[in-house]
Length: 497
Image (cartoon, rainbow, N blue to C red; front, side, top):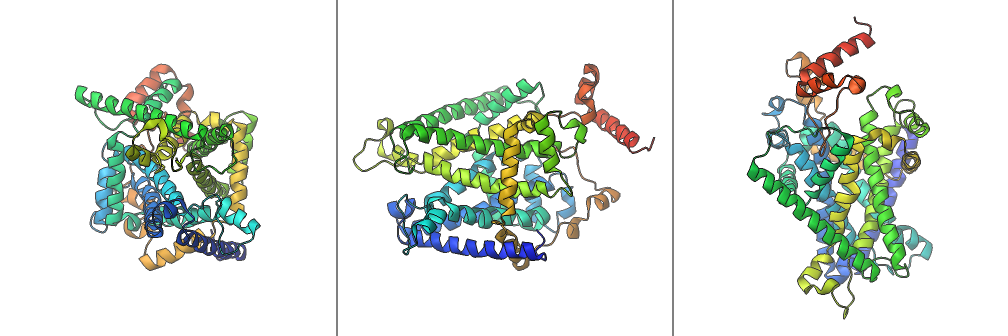
């Protein structure tokens, strides 16, 4: 966002005022023990957790932008200038580690957002400083204060800086530690049921799953599938506990909401989050292909016309509006799925108190959301991007996201990013490693064939979808052939041959 524009400057200013007001409200709720954690434990615990969670969320979001963006860049270019960033990318660029990091990182996003909600989310009957009911309804009951706080402070501002200053942003031990945690989460196998979804989607799409590693040994295969099926069992258990709590009215869902409606809201919100996650993948998948290849459906054409209209500003606008939608849904899902047993009531399924305390942490809802409302939908969209474009719901959600972005509610993120960049002394990556064209001239060009994304599917060049099967197999076996044919097609399209 260009802050020199009077309109954008106004949006940034009023957004900052709303953000400051929201932060004051949240801190006041904690002080008066009107949030889940402050009422059950102590306000000090809530203060510590909410700021630790929001601070960690900044690195989780910024780290993704940096590590994904630096994946194709030759790491030797910044080995001396940014040694910690070099350590990070040496890990993620080895084999399929980038995929593993992104999988673990997705769970960290959901978990930190759930932690913020547990620390600062208002109780159902929260009242503060004599605010009129309409003001409490807007900022407290609707969750607007929490949404503005999380999006502006924890997510969008860090994405702004990390997308342009990748090296400086990730060149910290905090970033390296966050990477290790994400890798450890993936290694634990907690999310390995996602790989089962990946295999199913690949089979349905008739596509090969890319891997930068040698085939697993027998022991490695047994270890992998053991974790995958254990993860599936845990996921089923999480659903069982959550649905039992919903039907018994033992969650933090607002009072008066019937159990059947709470269950419907739960699955509806997960579907909305899933659609938004899938839309992001589908939009990026078709961004660089000709308009003629983006599908013949009326809704595909309407969606792409709106998304790529004019100078293409609607794509980043969608990303901002999408962030608002996703965080809003996650806060509501956290409220719906957080188990809350009243004093004297029996524990769910008669488990012991220690396990019941685990249920109350929100970890179960975080795991369900990560696998079923995020990763699974991303995998489906990566295999069937045109099907997502042809869905009318995609068009209406795109409209909603653009409307939310237009309100300027997240304008404060740009101001925070500018202040952070100035204090930290961040510089654009071109200062250290030059542009992609300069790197190519210096024989240190980018590795454009580097795969990115959780369980990314092997994709043939756009022109090859209707190629003979023998040619497809040959291009899959030897990527250099596909690159050569792609280059020849580009030359013909540009009139060079």
